[in-house]
Picture (cartoon, rainbow, N blue to C red):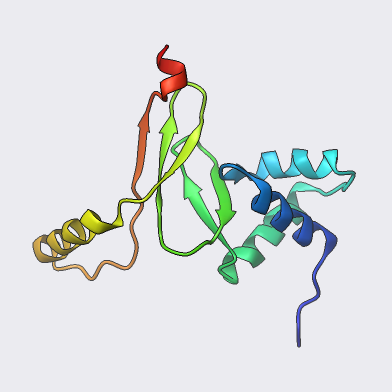
Length: 128
């Protein structure tokens, strides 16, 4: 049986499509309220779980005590996060990363199934 698309799920997906960086559940709730959709926190988390299970969105953690969400698009990627203004830039570093993953596998004996690499620093705008 096909699952029906709820207004909140469609709106969350659209917000993530238009977002310039990954959004937290709190940011999504605030944006939904601005759009006139009165949703509670439980509904948003339930919809995020469904989108995660379908692999339509990905979860990222920038070490700030909350998870963020973005559309799953193509290859795995990483981020640079400004510790001052919280700006986020997507990075494409996969070429060299394969060598590192091989080294980790060789040293640990693990079969690596996933990894999380995020870079934190101060963006150009905040450096001035």
